[in-house]
Image: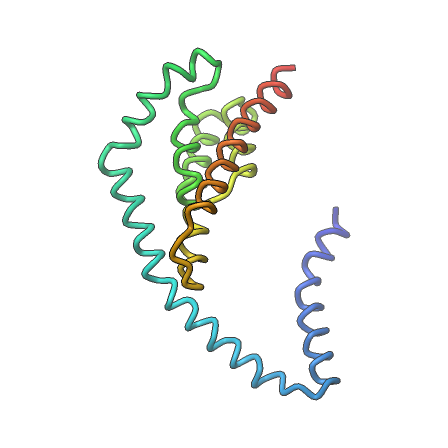
Length: 177
């Protein structure tokens, strides 16, 4: 374990050093190239701000309106018949929208039920098995100017649904043994 920690501590500085060394050998103006890359990064960050703001406001409205609680109440009876805890519904609903909000929900579930509980394990597995589809589409498609994202949205949400279902099946099978 200490060898992995040492490697992970040194790998990034070594890669940076190798890039600078390769650039110097090829006579590339490395500092000027670094500064140009930094400028492009700042411009990209500024162009992403409206998309991020729109996404954050939408999430806040969704949660503050009570729609989240309504969704949980609507789905919970069906899930309880399937043996799926209703406490996991907010995570499943918010995960495709926001990674940070999903992480906050996962943290709360683990704090409430414990990391070794079925809900804690299911939340952790679900967190790792799904992606922030709407965030990815909004930010990255917006950054490159793609306006029509219909098929990507369908495929991304379908992949999230499959990840959620697979998490439930795998956790039920593995942790019920």
